[in-house]
Length: 118
Image 1: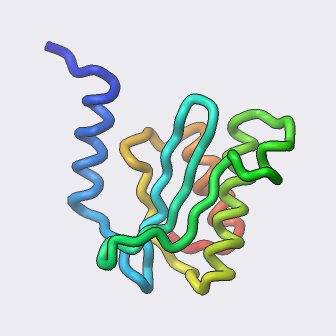
Image 2: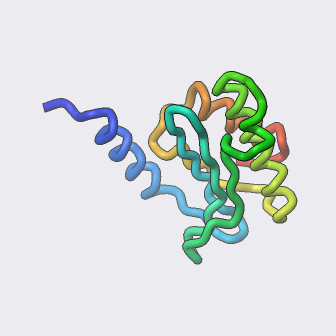
Image 3: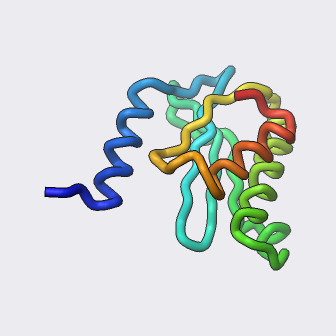
């Protein structure tokens, strides 16, 4: 019996999370993509806390009438700025089971352009 999309993504997510973990020096950049929005967090898995977070629902980004891929670029730049302000230069990228293309790819590239290293 074939897997559903959600079950397939969960298996990929668990496979990724076995290998990567965020620390206070190098937090995990976790991405969640819904149909309309995209959310990003920097997470310290040792202390189990979210250090920095942003999303496409933030007023500055939500007010702009752009495509979802361009919206993801804006979120990537915003998370890079917030991470730099909080003192984080390097992160571990967690695509959360999503394929690395489209909005996930544009967010990651924008975060790299913003100065994050991963």
